[in-house]
Amino acid sequence: MSPEAARAVAPGATVALPRPTVAVGEATGRPRRPRWGRLVVHLLLVASVAVIGFPLYYAFVISTQSLDQVIQRPPRLLPSTHALENYVEAWRRSHMGRLLLNSMIVAVAVAAGKIAISMLSAFAIVYFRFRGRQFVFWMIFITLMLPIPVRILPTYEVIGTLGWLDSYAGLTVPLMASATATFLFRQFYLTVPNELCEAAQLDGCGPLRFLASFLLPLSWANIAALFVVLFIYGWNEYLWPLLITNTDEMRTVVIGLERLIPRSGTELPTWNLIMAGAMMALLPPVAVIIFMQRWFVRGLIESEK
Amino acid sequence: MKRTVFANRWLPYLLVLPQVVVTVVFFFWPAAKSLYLSVFKSPPFGGRDIFVGLDNFTALLQSPEYYDSIVNSFVFAGGVTALSVLGGLAVAALANQKIRGLAVYRTALLWPYGIAPAVAGIIFLFIFHPAYGVLPYFLSFVTAYEFNWLLEGWIAMTLVVAATAWTHLGYNIAFFLAGLQGIPDSLLEAADVDGAGPVRRFVSIVIPLLSPVTFYLVVVNMVSGFFGSFGVIHAVTHGGPGHATEIMVYKLWKDGFLGLNLGSSAAQSVILMALVIGLTMLQFRFVEKKVTY
Image (cartoon, rainbow over all chains, first blue to last red; front, side):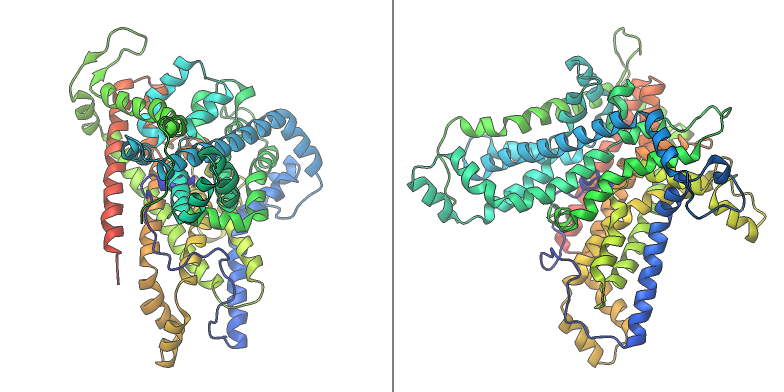
């Protein structure tokens, strides 16, 4: 689920989470259960992990089999020895290198762009009093109510007019407005003590210096958390790249994968290659979640407030 | 409290400029154009737009296919929400126990959030594959029913709902865990002393206290089901078999980009816009009332 789409309707909705929990699940003083009770909980958790993990395991298993093994009955649920050749072939056939590169560029640019644009506008809204400030704030707010489907044709037209079809600019710039990131930074700046700004001004520090030398270093935790969530959003976006790319060179991996599935019906789908492709497409965002889990959970939950 | 601010005439405008430009060019202008197009009939290959008033809307409301897409959207979004919110609550309640290895479990439960619904759909497509899939194979021992998503609409719907719910689970688990962490231990201990068993404690204390989070998650999952689920339909079923999995967003795209029926597509956009605005209002009303307590 993309955080933007998810939040389309929950703008700045204060979820009543009683305390800001970063380390979800750290030890609490809950009454200890008897030994057998804990065993049951472990068993149930292992069962949940197995159920949730099964589709991925199955995709992996299929990606390591030869086509004969894939279609054999009863289905073979153990890995086989054809992994290397399948992954090499899937890579070659789908131009995976290019697809992954495009996805990486798009995900990083969207995340970085959203963060940069939002930091600047939140800074203006909190640290300046200017005519039209409220108006700008509401403008940003209303974008939450305009997900891509409600403006799909005209946005496509705009991209065409700009000559941005099949370009990285077209893939990234229109996705860079972010109400949620702006609200997150605004919220954060409001918690920065006034004295910091006063002291900086006394020392003759201008607004841009203040932003770069004081606010930015304080914001790294927020930036990292947002980055993880927005990276996944950018990587997994489907409708937008499908609309504005026509050439194979500009497709992102999520779109490109669909093309491994033959629709004609005359050729036998090479399911082992499709699954190898799927594994390669899902690995980067899943790895980001696993290795940056702290930031991921924080980013998800903080950006809802 | 009065905030210390900087005095500068033009700098704030420069700072908000990038956001405002993107917002106006890619959000406001196209949204306004959607409204405009919805009352015109535009010949797809050029020529003048013809004003048709509300004809595009009345045509939609008289079309059984459009009704089907509305029903499909509700079935799809409702199914995804029910499955992933209830599943998320159950798993989060388990993972919130004071046991060893919690961090490992947590990681092992959250990661599906990273998988794009379209990619999840492709994996589930093979699990459901009528000839080679593992699910129809095992079902064939239980029932003689031919479990073929290419022929039966409800199976295709089950497929896309299951795949999408799978990717939503991690999100819901993360939120329920955070909500569970916020419930004071003293409350549960007091109930324990009063003789309430674990089930009673969960039903009478935990669930009511979680209702704001639950409500929020229901709205977010519904919205994501409505507006964010184009990918899984496009990658897996193409709206089929027949129109069985054609949800509103998919029909909108199909009519606009494949059918080149711009007026109808714009009218569908406007209907969706009304829906988002309505849902936003709903969200704010309920959040203000805090749902329970």
